[in-house]
Length: 313
Image (cartoon, rainbow, N blue to C red; front, side):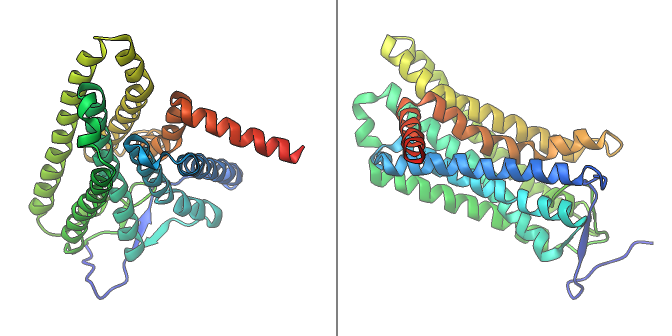
């Protein structure tokens, strides 16, 4: 018998992705807590380095700072809840808590992709039109682009949340470690054509951004091959961006495809890895990739830690 949950009821969703025994619960908790704290630490280190080195006058570092802030948001949308669940053996989340998690996760996704698109445009202008770079990428324009990135992401996620919140639900079981929009939409008692249409428009938007990035990089590679300096700039600033973009895109595509078309009978561990990769890996490796490849950041971080070690000694 199907139960219809209306808006006057306090709906509590059951999360079925977590399966840890009493013996290994503490191991998982400590590992995830260390990973979360390390993710926050390296992102904050990069942000502080950019501020302390007065790199805020350089567009690329402003976009990188925005990427790190968004990485902290993405990590914080997942880790606190999963740490709570493991610690207290909890497998539930309230209706409001579920939609809050969906909102933050999808904001992180939209903001990440839009920011990576803007960063591709910045690299295109820097390498393909170097003489016009300071005309096209003024600090005021950069801040405007960052603001539009956030506003555009907020608009996208708000529309998606409103479309999902209107649905009456006939179930409370979510087969994931966290709340996702599609997992809730699947519980609907009514037609979800409007939600599917939104999903199609969202996908088209992301595909359009991907095409813009690819076009930018085709032109960047052509321009880089003309000189030694161009190749060096490409390796230092564009390769980290490409690695970040490919990693995030593959992680996100895996999660979306697995959520919609994956089998519930497949290995739980595989489903969990596919579901959390885009929330765990990009925020963790992005600052590491940029920190290793950008000499200014690498040298400043090394100097900061050498000073701290000397002070302790």
